Image 1: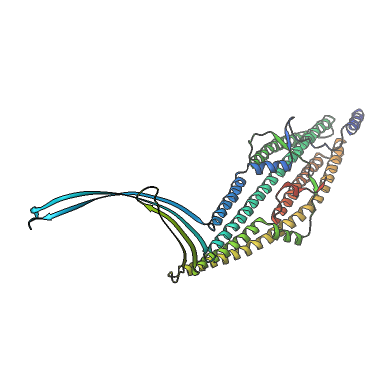
Image 2: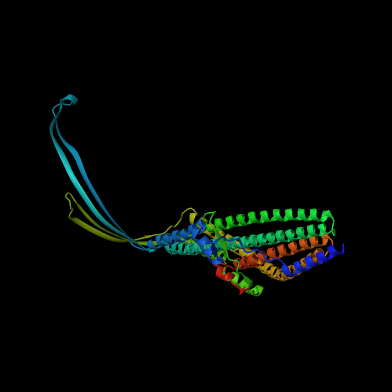
Length: 457
């Protein structure tokens, strides 16, 4: 029995000397030749391929084309028309011999053919429309601003979704590394349990329990591998590339982000939020709509000019011209203009209410995002310390069990605590990075991954 204990002590010393404390996390499973994409590259690819962004940019082009249409209404309208015709008629000469109808006699018939040509050049220029054309142009100009703001909003939504998918893939990789580390730990524990059982130190139940835990660790590893593939597929979909594209993502992330005070972020949101800019443009559209409706109560003045050539031969040579000022005023239209003005005013009032509601929601969104970042930052420090202590606790429990001075339940409990601490750290890191991205999006500044740069690790 003494020889067995001496042999056990020698094996324990060899284990302590040659096996490092705490297995290192397995490297990211990246096949050779695989592209390693940074967050900037992922976002740029997503923006270039996303159909929503393409449609939003086309919407800006469409609004610009409509603005050109309203601008053209100020230009003179020049019309050239040509009319050519031919007329045929019969001329009858009759003479009465008797009063009875059958005594009437047709004496002669003359066929008449006549050509006519009319060339007309018309000019029309609006001189005053009661500010209707100016209001239409202003509405079109503000529609461009709305389209640009909506395109920026769509871009920022895509950037946030892509950034979240990027960090989700990193999270799945880290979880996979942890599951591999857990599997290796349970393999080592099973070997130690079998060794202690062979040496008569522990019961058979320790070996069986270790085998069960090893099988559970293997299942968790399979699940983690599947989650990696799902996360990669999601990111491929966000980037608009083939779902089977072979790539990996860079795990070089900022250790911390620069965080300002809450008032600074609220002020930033008032200046930069694209949906707030779109709402402001909508308000200006509403004001211009009132002006356009009020133009129905004002007179209009147009300049009209005509130069005309008429004759029976082509080209015609009978020339005439005219120039006129045409003024008109709607004295009574049955209340149509008044109704249009009332509608435009109510639409503006609705926009003002929507703007206030949007501003309240933005304040809430920024405030929540700000405190979520603060919370994640504090939890990250705690989770990092807890992970270090859990790692150390597991190593101690492993040495104690190998020496036969602690039961199996101690090392298994320590292993569960180790996994919980590591998983909590992985989740907190994900929360920290994504909450910071949400804060930037809430302030309207998440237009590129450059904003995600902070203090490097």
